[in-house]
Length: 231
Image (cartoon, rainbow, N blue to C red; front, side):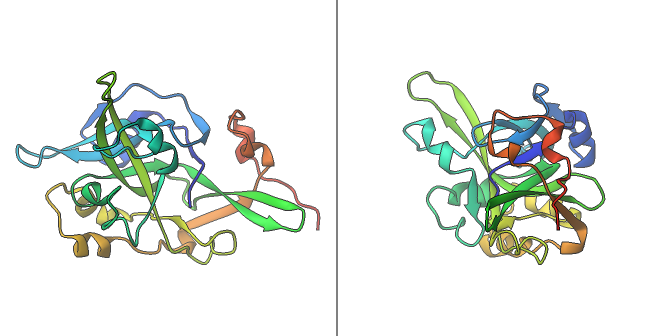
C-alpha cells in the first residue's frame, strides 16, 4: 500500500518533468508527510473531444466517486488495487476515463521487527520523482455544491526491493507509458491493465528512517534523514 509519501517540489518543476502544458493549481505547502485527504499535485489530460491538454492540478488524496453521498468515503480510498480497480464500482469509471500520474518524491513503508514497526523511505535511485499511477474523479457536495477533484494511487505487486517490507507497492509508470496511461480516449480495460507492471528494483533505493513519520503532525525534512541502526 501507500499511506504516506513526500511531495516537496514546486508545481512548475513537476509540470516540466511530466510534460504538462499548463499549471492550474495554487502552490501547495511542501510536505514530507502527505497523508490521506491532503491536497496533492497530479498530472492528467483533459479534453479528448476538443484537443487534449496535459495539465498539472491539485487533487484531494482519497477518491470520492461522483455518486458518493458524502466526502468521508475518501478517507479510505487513497489506494486502489490494480488487479481489481477496473471492476470495482468505486473505481471502474475512473479506470477507463480518468487516469493520472501523481508525482511522489518518495514514500514510506513499515518493516515488521521484533520491537515494532520501523519506517523505511523509498525513492527513485536517480533522485527524480516517482510517477505513481492514479485515478481521479469529480464530486459535487450535495449540501454545499462544492466541487472536489480527488484521486487515488494504484497499488500492485512489489519488486524485490519492497517485498521485504510490504506485500504491496505503488504502481510506478515508466516514462514510455505516460502518454498511453494519460490518454483520456483509451477505454479498453485490457490495454490499460497491460500498462501496469512491476517497476524495476534497480531504479529505486530505500533506507530506514525515524518513527517521527508515524505522526502526521510531524512534517520536516528530518523525516527522511537516514536512521543509524546499531548492528
